[in-house]
Image (cartoon, rainbow, N blue to C red; front, side, top):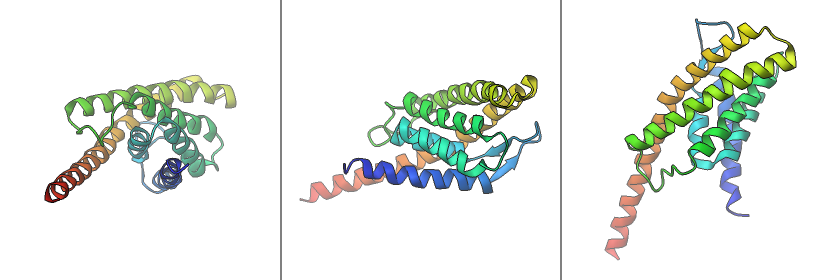
Length: 185
């Protein structure tokens, strides 16, 4: 039971942070209407990598739903955000920053997984769901989905990688401190 408490705390905090970032720190994309550059996907990818696919799914879906529930067509995008978190969590399951340094191999794997997850979630699933749920124009939603996938992937490359590097440095300092402490005793 105790092992689930940190994940529950991270999930709730992640949902709140994702929603706050989505609502307050979105930069409009001038490429296509209704698509923003948002840093919340970098946070989501980091959380999914560190705490697993279920946490990623919940943070992505509920965080997105909380921030855009007032929109007329929010459900396909919220489902896609949840899928993005799930896929990144599954694809990066073996990447453990606590045990491995965030090196070039980690960087390439993390960003390859998040790019593929973004394309599947936003360039494919979100448009298909928007067509099925709301009968939106296929050409427009697929264009919107591709722009969203690429912009989300770009912000994740920057923000998610920075979060991973920062966390890796903190963990490395903790390991050094523990080594120093254990050698004194």
